[in-house]
Structure formats: C-alpha cells, structure tokens
Image 1 (tube, one colour):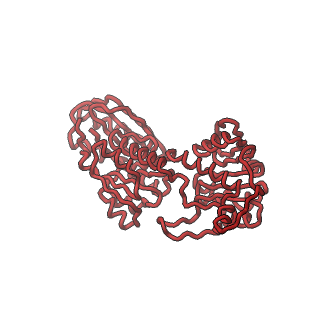
Image 2 (cartoon, one colour):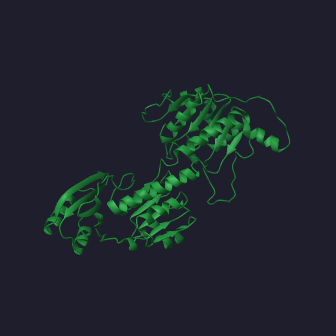
Image 3 (cartoon, helix red, strand yellow):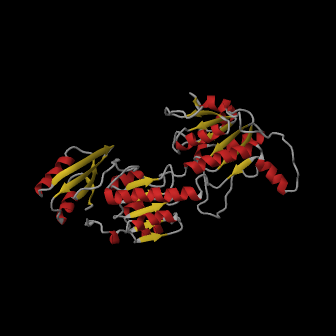
Length: 408
C-alpha cells in the first residue's frame, strides 16, 4: 500500500541533544532516512531554523519548544521528548496547533531506583565523608554513625512507577516501607500507605522523593518539613529541583538534624555539560551531589530512544496517540484501505460534517474511532473507495478543523 499524503522520502526528522542511536535505528528500519542528527540543544532562533520544515522532532529536556518555535514550524506533526517530562514544550500551543507530544516516562525508572538504593547505602555508611578523608590521607577506620539498611524504614513520597520500584528493591534489602501519595495506590510487598506527609517524615530513617514538578510540589520539603523529619535521618531528591527548599536543607544539614542528603536535581541547573555549577550544598559533610543523572545509564538511554521513536513512528504511520499529551488517546489496529485523521475543536457537528463530506465522495466508512479530551477531538476513519486529492483539502477547510491528514 502506497503512502500518498506523506511519502517516506519527504518526511524530515530532526533529532537533537545527542539522542541514543536506537532513536535513529527505529526510523531507518521503517524506511525513513531524511534524518538530521544534532548533539546539542539550540537557542530559540537557531532552533526555529533547524526545524522550520521538520515533520517530527526529537528532544531531551534542554530544548524549549515554545509558542514562537511552534508558530514557525507549520509542517510539524509531532514532538518526541526523549525523557520523563514534557514541561519543555508549550503544550497549550501544541494542542491548539494539532501537534502531538509524546514522552518516555517509564524507560529509565529502574536506573533511578537503583541510584536511590545505592545512595541510601553510601549515606547510611557515611561513604562520602570517609572517601573524602581517605583521599586526604586520613585513615578513619571505625563504625561510628555507620548503619545497615536492614531493619530501617524508607519513606517514599510519590508511589508511582519509580517510587514503587524503589519500594521493591528496598524491601529485598530488609527495609520497612512507608509511602505517601495524593492518589490511592496499591502497595507492593510490605509497603504501607500513610495518611499524611508528616506521619511519613517523623517515622522514616530515609526519605526519598518521587513527585512531578508543579505548583503543589514546589518547596513541598521546606523548613517545617525538614524540622519534622526524624533526627539523624537522610533525605534523597532524585525527582525535580523545585521540590526541596535548598537553603533550608543546607541549614538542617549544618545543624546536624539531618545526617545526610543525596541530591540529583536542583532549582537552577547549568545549560550544558561542563558549565560551572554552584550550590549551597557544596562542601557539606555526608552530602552526595550528582548532575541530574538519575536516569543516565546506557540501558535507560537505549530504552528511551526506542520507546519514544516507536511512539512517533506509530503516530506517523497509524495515527495512534497512546501516551500523547496533546491529542486524545486512541489505540488503533492496522489500517484498512485508507485511513483519515482529523483533529478538531471539540464542538457539536464536526463529525456530521466529516461524514457528509465522505458520503459526497461515496466513501464507505469501514471503521471509525473518536475520542475527545477537553477542547480537542480526534477522529480516525478507515474508509473504502477512491481517495482524490481535494478530499484532504476539503477536510482541512471544514469548520473547527485543527489538522487533517490522509495516511493511505
């Protein structure tokens, strides 16, 4: 079956920020070779130049897809965020423009979970301090303030995909698990849900954060919460930099109320590898600082590269929007004779107008899939009959249309 609206050699794919080779392989195996690959993020003006004629764009967290960028990319069908978050994309504008936005939220969960466990062991054994002293020539061979994880309580804030994996790994090491989440979650193993954040803080030897970045989580661990933590406990933040009040954390670490901390994310982070980094936590005893590498393993990057590219490919070739943040989600079977995609304002009468147009051209609808979300509707139709060029143009000019595309 020939691709009529978007021949493969005409599809331009732009991949930024040094994505894993897997991200390219997925497209090439499917027959797409018009791929531009860049190893860095670009400022807005340069980015617009790079993607002005692109159909698909792949980014990590440093590239900002703003309203201005989207306005200058009229051919753009979809953006793939090869990372956990999508806050680097103007989702409202992408929705208005009918641009699908995907991410890969679960591909690096194991990597983050393993680092949480590793840092827990290092901090409970005061390895950061002893490593520094040994490098300085001081032989501090003692067991003072050094503890096993076994029998200790781990408090997990945010019991999603990462938090629950941390729970399973920690239990295997003999820990007791408490978790707090704003949504009801099914506990795994011996994990127990608590009703309040304060209950978790006061009862945990280690507190690990696994929450998204939004207004409700901004500085959710501040002066009062840190004071409520068990004396001598440890705080881990491998979620988002805005979740912890860094100034307050530095104070409780200096006072000795908190025995240690592992921080992988910060309110302000350098733009690029090698840039200078400054934090109030630098130089403090028993503090592990890492440069936002929770998910930075080869396995995670391989998984993300494949997962995000497959989502983009599935949308391009089938119209599937599972995992999409801007277009209602529809899981689609293999297409019939022809497949028509129509993104529109969620307004009464749109579907009737589409069906009338198809009837005008004597196209028989073999299957029809419709989903709406908020102000946007998405309908996919498999039709049988002769597709002529002006059908697509007429679909685009129907009232309330955002974008229309004929796949085959």
